[in-house]
Image 1 (spheres, rainbow, N blue to C red):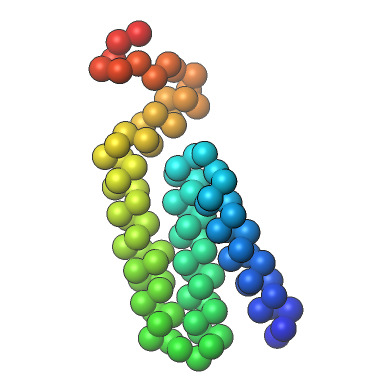
Image 2: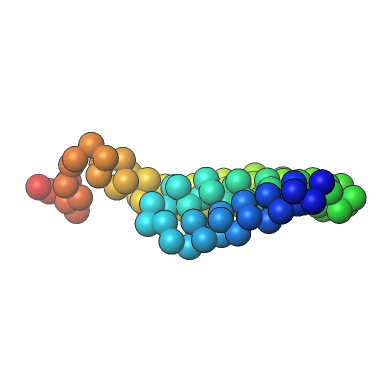
Length: 95
């Protein structure tokens, strides 16, 4: 069981570093969701199911929806998709 706790700790720390260092905002949001789910597993291991359910619902659910909505609102998702297709980021559709 100690090994599992250590793996969870390393995973959470790796997620935090990845979110801080990544330049792709969508990837950062997805990694943040994974970190929240790992934290909910830790709450289960600490025998606190009410906090685990709250972390899973709020951390991985509501926060992620808000992050994706904010990224869509500032058009970060559209720019990243356009960058993958090789299109230039021209304001107002100008090229």
